[in-house]
Length: 333
Image 1 (cartoon, rainbow, N blue to C red):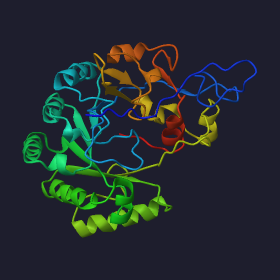
Image 2 (image 1 turned 30 degrees about the horizontal axis):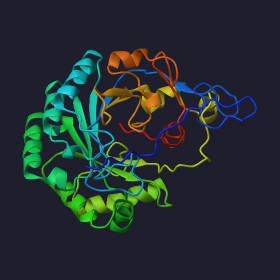
Image 3 (image 1 turned 180 degrees about the horizontal axis):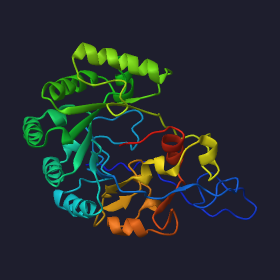
Image 4 (image 1 turned 90 degrees about the horizontal axis):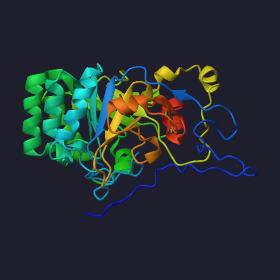
């Protein structure tokens, strides 16, 4: 197995007195010297687990560069997940999310889902619905979970566009039909199913929802394209110097509240290749940046201080914070 380490980290350097401050370098102030915005944890509503970055396909703009060779985040074990589930239960967490990579490549995914559901959590799995999910053992296990827990298990399938051409532009040739077959099976079997699309095709959100609605009708999928919980449209992100930083003034300028941000209600657990134990991060979009590590338990994460954190509050010192969450309005839950 070849390890591919993605280049998604942020380098925090101290500029000299004569050098201008670069964007996203100082945790406390922006390049213009204004106080950087921060987000406190309002309530841990959703705890995410990255089950590993290995995936059966390589997408053109994968948020965390998952691929068949990227094992920068290794497979979590069911025992490691169990420890965090017990902590989350004590904190009143409502939902457990599983993402990757492709979660159904993790050999212990069914055990993780089963324990989370048995403990009373709602469970959300992000999947491409392709071959890993469609293996007989996985389908049999999912059907058992569906019979036992019903709509508390939701599978959100990545279908980047409602046309094959644009979907495969993002995900590669021959990725459309397997995803469609996976969605056919999920919907026909009665699973609560949602779709994740992208907004990078130079069309309005209304146009996109109309296109998806037509596809859902043609396939007979009981998914409401006008429901933002059933069809989530995510903003595209690119490494660009044009992304503005978020200051404390931006909340009133944009008419938004810190409580609306993903890191106000969620945390994510990852295990890095070579690490002894998993660590907690603010959200699903910052899996490789060690500056955003909050500790090895949820209790530690709530006390994190210094650097990117202020008593557990997250300082928005990453371009993804600005582009995806604050300006893009994105949220993985």
